[in-house]
Amino acid sequence: MRADVNGLMQGELGDWLAGQSEMRFAAKKQAIDRWTWGIALMMPTMAFVWFAPWFDGWRFMLFGAAMLGMSWWGYVPIAKAKKSIKIGINSGIAKSLGIAYEHDVEPGDEFEAAKRYGLVPRYDRDGFEDHWHGSLEGHDFGLYEAHLEVRRGSGKNRRWDTVFRGAIVRMQFGRDFASTTLMQRAGKHKAWFGLGGTKDSVDFDGHRLSYVDQVHPAFEDAFDLYSDDAVEARVLVHPAYVEHLVALEKAFRGKAVRALFARGEVILAVEQRENLFESGSMDPEKDRLLAEETAEQFAALARLALSINQNERGRSVGAEKTREAIARADASRDEAARRRAAGG
Image (cartoon, rainbow, N blue to C red; front, side):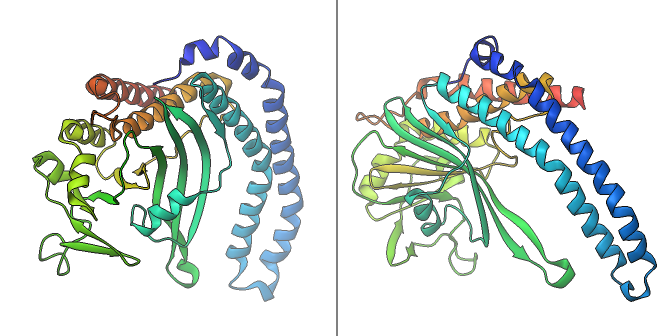
């Protein structure tokens, strides 16, 4: 599933974007005005700070803080304009696919489950945005981006470091099941401080999941499987689509995917190296490129969610189109990188 960006840009979305030129111009002008006034007001104040003896040792810090504050104040109108464009483009893409999009989102039970079972790391600060939801191939579906950070260092060296940026995906599974099964990165749960192989079992707030042997060598190289029902776990992680899943996981470049099968749903954490769905720009010439990138990002995540799902016969949804989908994703990513390099 992928949005027809050409059709969108030639239709309602293109017309809407064409009407945003005045808003973009006004935002740029307001930003320039704020920066101009900010510099004019800041110069005499900072001159006083620079030469006053009681500011010894604090001059550079105060000057840096003032510059950051002035820069942020000026950038606010641009940030609002970019957010408006982003919401318009992403909403248009979602509408064309028969689903819904909202920029703001409050995480639900799926994120609590992701935390409990270790799909995401521990963190001190979180942020969530870009909520896509509706139905894919008849399965209830929800997706949003999470940005998780930890506080490190001390004193002047204190900083926020990103420990996870990526998508949290929830999808209704195609068949009934009662167990809880965790598909985690290979080696995530090592015994004896990493010297004794994989743990036989892992406890999550009193819920013990045991290691499940798999017969597919490609799966064992990439993932470990834990469950409270080994028989059902082997049915859920069906050999017929393991190759498909591993191929798509490689398309996400390594450490991307982990999953939890619980309560009749599958929950995915898909780690990315880049911010997702950022289709907002002050340059109208970039609208089509950014819309294409967003459409492909969503399509790749949707294909991944469908690949790990099954129908009642145990076949992964859409598995027969795996290689073609991955090839399109790779070609689209390479083309986007080429365009960015040419434009930069």
